[in-house]
Length: 328
Ligand code: DGY
Image 1 (cartoon, protein in one colour):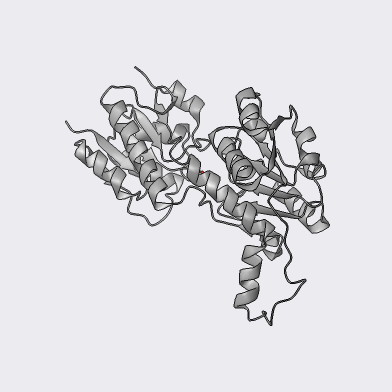
Image 2: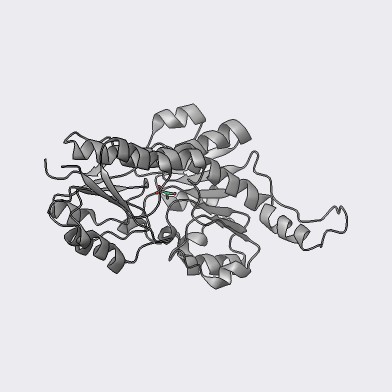
């Protein structure tokens, strides 16, 4: 009998085509948006699915696993991050969980740099200014920004993405790189002339730009808080393309209003899609709607990788990107 897979939202065609070519019977949610938990559980209870392709916007907990039933072997997440999935519950129920690492590294690193350049050069603010008809002629003091070239970048979390951001910073903009990670990487230090800081507290005071690249864990929630904003330079910028709750949005608002830091550029939000409304009033912040991996090429690759994880797992083989092994 064909394997049956539920896809919680429309994804790029290449992934769907792979699943179909593997002979899977597919049900793709037709809702134009995120399924509520009740809708998701309702959909999963309707049929007996062997696997689910889910998104970072689906909160997958024990109740959802229960709704999927005993025959469901895998939840393939269409994201590198998997903080939306209760891994402990998956382990208890012997359900495999996979993710999509690697294929989005370059795109997220590019977006991080796009945010860094745009906030420093006040690109979005200048665009608003120009469209509003406020441009009345060149001026020596008009919308002055800050250089990125030659400045110091502090990277928090030296995984794949953090390392690529460092690469662009050093090779493209002659920046000095400081990094904090739980693990020191001396090869990286040699290659990029980077300096290791074993505590975030010793990185923050020396950085002109701070870019966050850690996963969301209990230990990284509100990693950027009042205390740590207070350690940053008042000329410095914060960039976050990782997960929203890593930054305490209220603390960020206080830091921007008080001029504790100069600016921030965020692709992710503490309670997304909701955003603290008072942040929207500030010109010192640049916002994008969780699109750091959002290029056509990368989203196609993510779709193929998620599909491939499902195909391998349901064929009884070891899929390439396991974050939680299921029953063997
Ligand atoms: C991920 O894959 O975790 C990203 O946040 C998606 O953009």
